[in-house]
Length: 484
Image 1 (cartoon, helix red, strand yellow):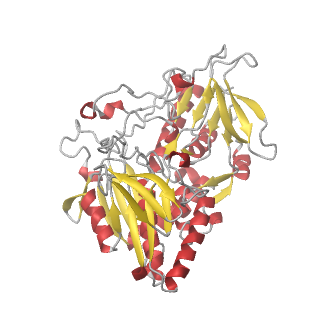
Image 2 (cartoon, rainbow, N blue to C red):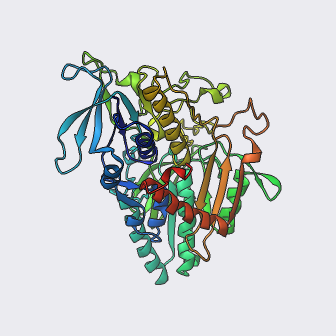
Image 3 (spheres, rainbow, N blue to C red):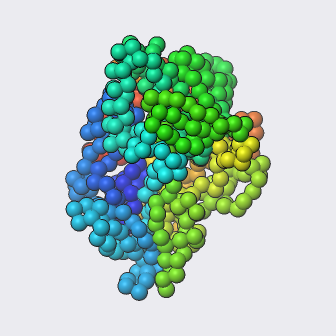
């Protein structure tokens, strides 16, 4: 009998747990350890953040779902890995700290196979004054999104009284990821302001660490649109210009004060942007987990990179940008040190950025980190679940399924306004996520599967996908038929 433990119940961890439980014989156990009692469909948080959805529409309780499917659930956070066992327990195990009613108590969870899908730590502390507990807003969690929606309504009230106000949306550090979420949010703010008929009194500014719009942390891409090849920079700039949204690129936020954002740009210049509303996404870091060998020696640096993400089957050697290859990226997400240890979703450490790394003239790093959320996380989870099935049931020596970001595509439907009648969304695909110039010398991607359009159909698709994926995550009848 094998014990499979999954850390985290986000898109990657939850998908992996459901798929494993569905396919593994019942004499094998699946346990999920996650600090929150609820599942959150994070892509729809941006709608909560503008008041177009309620938090209960993007969340649900995990315990009933797991009980129905025969998955054990422990509400706790992992704090230690003991992949070789230790003095108190000879078998591999984790140490977890309860976050439920008995919060703070520590306990051991043994495993035969461990899937690290802990997701990101929201590193607001990287920028002074950043975050909902300081001087800016966020939509990273439902709670953050509610706060953002309330602040936005206050801004609309002031605009209706005739005030001229500045709203800033973007990222709050030079090495952030998830520029796509900021992209969606700024267009939804624009849409809500227009619906309230106060848009002409609002200055709306998009602040990003991308060297140019349309980079999205994937180095930008050429897309097919209307029979032409268009770079994502042109595509994105046209959307911002049409909606009178200003943009500032190549920016590293140095600090956030109650009514101002201070930032440095790639040219080394420092700037102050006075504002009345600031929604700035934080950089991500790995969860603060320690790892120990059998004798108690600290092996954290062997398993994790300095920012807390777990090392997997990638090429982490330091090379110049020109020498990076698609083959550097992991395929199976297996730890090179422990063959029963895996990391998927945001938890794994990328070998290098996808966008070209840049520094300001002062030496400050200003370039996006690679995105690893949404569809790619679910695809990784599916591939890993199939590999574990082979290793557990058929006694295969290692993982057989792969899901390298250099071999899979991704689809994204980015909302530009939530309304059944007037809503729009930008629908984009790319293949592969990590450009491969050996296979596709001209553009790094196959333009047959890389395109972008914006229109009302995209909004309908976005809305339908919301309900489909909530249905799937709840494990309703036939849930596995809905693709990742």
